[in-house]
Length: 109
Image (tube, rainbow, N blue to C red; front, side, top):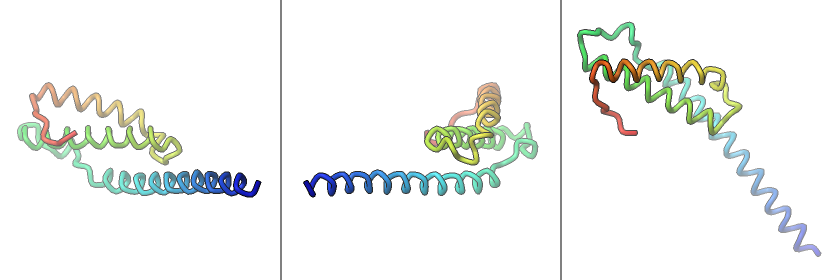
C-alpha cells in the first residue's frame, strides 16, 4: 500500500517540476524577445534605394514576428500575447514587401 502513494507522489512532483521548468522557459523566452524587439532594425531608417539593407531589415522583422508567434503559442500567458495580432499583420505586410522587392532569404528558418 505504501508503494502506490509513493509512486503517485513521484509522478505529481515530476509534473510540478515540469510545469515550473516550462514557466521558467516562458519567462526566459519573453525576456529574450523583449531585448530582441528593442534591437530590431527600423524600416523607416532603411533606405528604399539600398535594396540589400531593406531586404535584411524586412527579413529580420519577419523572423522576429515568427518567433513571437511561436513563443505565444507555447506560452499563452506571456506578456507578449496581446501584441501577437499586430506583429502577425506586420509580418504579412513585410512579407508582401519582401516579395515585391524581389528579396532573397538569407536567414535560416
